[in-house]
Every structure is written in C-alpha cells, then in structure tokens.
Image (tube, rainbow, N blue to C red; front, side, top):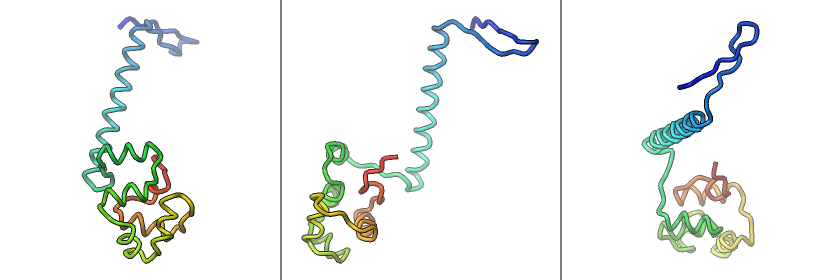
Length: 127
C-alpha cells in the first residue's frame, strides 16, 4: 500500500492513500459490517430473539397490507378464532384489520402474543 504521511509539528495528522486503495478499504469495511450484522442475527435467532417468515408474508407487509390480518392468515386463524382467544368482538377485529379503528395497547399486545409476533411488528416499527 502506497501511503503518504502528513505531519503537523512532528505529530502524524493525515495518511493519504491512492483513491483505488481507499475504495478497496471501504469495500472491505462494508463487508466486515455485513458479516458482523449476520453474526448478530444468527446469535439472536439461536436465542429466539429473531424470527423468520416466508417471503410471501414479508411481501404482503411491504405492500402495506395490515400486519394483523397478514399474520393471522399466516397462522391459519380465522377472525372468529383470534377474536375469541383475545376476548374481543369479530367486528372490532375486522375494524383493526381494515385500519378503520386503532386498538388499545392491551388489545394489540394480546393480538401480538397470540400471533407469536412482537407489538412492533403490528405497529410497523422495523428497527
């Protein structure tokens, strides 16, 4: 590697390298970040902190479909079945699934628990 060192008062302040070498280092740093992200995901997945879903489910969520409805159908549940399990009416659940009504934190938490997802997945927080 061809490096030019620039000093200020005998202190090294800059290391200048050719642009193509800089690009190569950036590419390696990005690859290393990707590897660390993958390792963190694998660890979280092994501990049950992360879940995987089929691409069809992810596609529906990315299309903007209601997450309660998407995950309910993915779990093979009917509106009647889910409503009974969390003790709400079918019309209320239908209104939640069509975005005509906003659920309370308790109801949304109960739905998330029953569907085996996090509240963030219902609310749309992807971080």
